[in-house]
Length: 440
Image 1 (cartoon, rainbow, N blue to C red):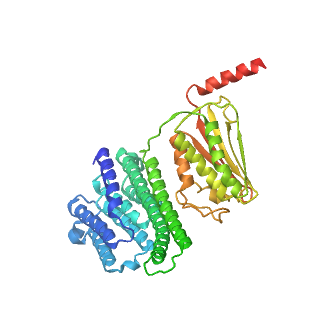
Image 2 (cartoon, rainbow, N blue to C red):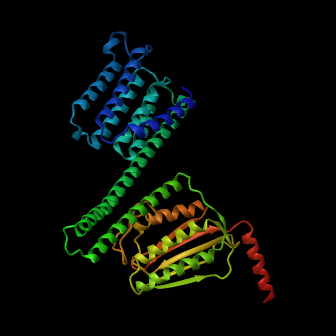
Image 3 (cartoon, rainbow, N blue to C red):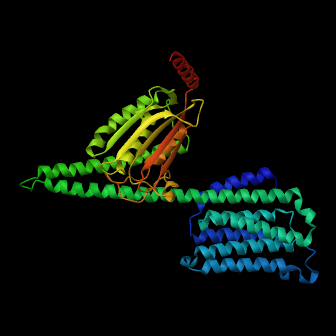
């Protein structure tokens, strides 16, 4: 089998396993192990040149046939075993047993140069069932060690550096990477489904209860309808439905960013203008919650190439996050300036800092993950579903920018957005700056 064919097979099997594998499905495990048993049987029967087997031990009594029979029996044991007994530990043990059986048949048939090696790939793909990315690399590593061990038992050590062995080991590690990626994708999909179902259920439950009470109030048999109560129920329905719409919109927008399908309408933008607009929009909310909003933007900044709507959305999300976690009497600072670490004025920095509750180091590591919420109650309003900061990060990275965060428990949080200046804007800014200094 050539390298191109192996890579194509790997890509095909990656897509196949993403659809076929269901964690804990015994039938999938048994099916793949049956394929391995049949492959081992084929090579044991048709690899005639076997210097390790005497004529007396040929046929069904040959050691390689015994290894195949043992593998068949182990699969029969899995078939009759109750599904609930197939824990992760047993599944991983079966993977290791499969590797040992393959290695034994390779050694006993001296099939180091045939395609039996690629049976290891099936075992590595099966590690998706274990739902641990590290298991894929563990199985691939042990496969390489066993293959190398048996190879040295019948070959000189210099033969190990033949090109076909190096290529096979490399492909096996690539397959392990594909398998671990599948596991991570499955876990991410489960997280999305879990959080969405939880949030949608809460909102739908609120709508259901409010609508039933509203129907009772407006029924023909109610002699004294409570108009205030009706208005309250209608308000609950409106808020809950708006929350669901916003959640679905955020999910769809994140998906577009992650798949590269978002369309940005980028134009030369004044960062200072956007910061001032957002600060003005949030000033009333801050006063209502007893907070001080400070806006400090350098008077002259180079323009950036950005979608003003998306950039405003990212900044409003950061301000909303600061508002949630800053108690009354606190301060929120927002502004824009030249990034100090860029002497050529090619980077503009937007910052949002607060004197809120802050975050621990372990929380900072995950703050931009989808659906992640830092522990602790919100100072104002309800906690969101953990999409706001993930969306901010996606927006900024789509603009070839970066975002960072600094925080400590009880000392507040500071977000910093850095965006590249528009082409020629930095040079023009520096030229004007030198002219102004020469006139002073």
